[in-house]
Length: 170
Image (cartoon, rainbow, N blue to C red; front, side, top):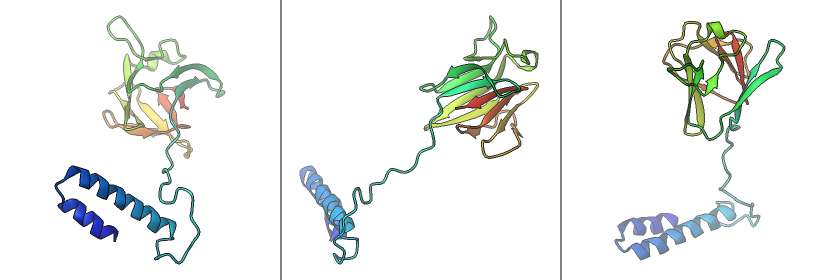
């Protein structure tokens, strides 16, 4: 029945009829799902059958600079941003994640790395820095050194290494 209504919907040129037919398709699909999808032998109806929202990764809200003991030193709220430069601000270039006052500032390039958000996912990319950028995924015990210009997806709980400076992704 659903296939027949959908086929007629595709052949129709009347917009109002298409809208009504589309509604019929949705209603038929809901009834079909509510009846267990097997012709009506089941009378149990599940709430929100067929409309479960897929699990989404936890949103990244901030970066937290941590010291050798894992204690927070500084934090930056990044929610709502799309692109952020990581490095050391100077008169020629301002960066959003400024590590100029970090313990290992001498190892950090002016524009060391960049964070970009694409379709609700964050990526970090090394900007041909002298000391390198690394990522340790929350589920791993070792860090991976990034190749310059190759984006790496990051998630909440990951640890970013900007030279020897550590940023916890939260």
